[in-house]
Length: 234
Image (cartoon, rainbow, N blue to C red; front, top):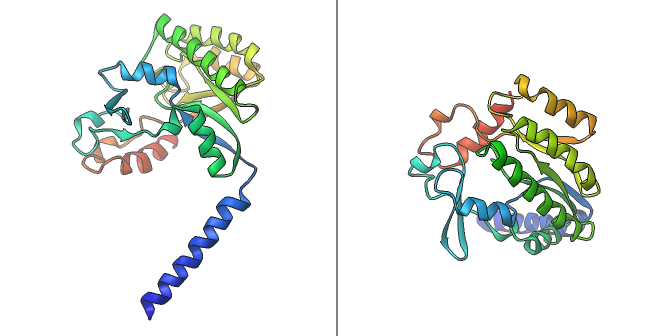
């Protein structure tokens, strides 16, 4: 009887959740939602070092992006990445399924932290142009946070100027907590942060590298993401 009662309660709660998820949330705006855009996926698939994407099959792509996870037996196979992360049509279908009216998408970590110099600036231009095109073709469903070639501060300043022509689609920039490698209080970032403020762009500050990583081995990704990311903010 107890089992039957619990089963009935679970069934009722599941139905309540389904009604809530399909009827109540109809105009949600999602601002923390990432995409590995087609061009970014192309870059990661060609890499042999972290960060990279490993194709186990045509339908099974795995992310290996966190520091040291390629050397840990519980994480070295990477994490499966669904098509909604890189296919725009699948992204829109995902939004429709979950009652999301609009999304402000951003490039997923680790952004362009692994590139520097002219290469970083050129790739940032390509990715932001791609992001603008994705947003413009979405008929008002998608907006974006641009990526900066942050390991090239002077290139970041030039890219911020270039983004002025994209403000219809681009609402801000995404930055990782390391900045150009020495933290956000690094003097070489001062002009970049000042320019962001002058342009009145939102900053989506996002962790990636975490802290206390030496304690999270042989536990998969759970501790790294649940503890390392959040502790990084503090």
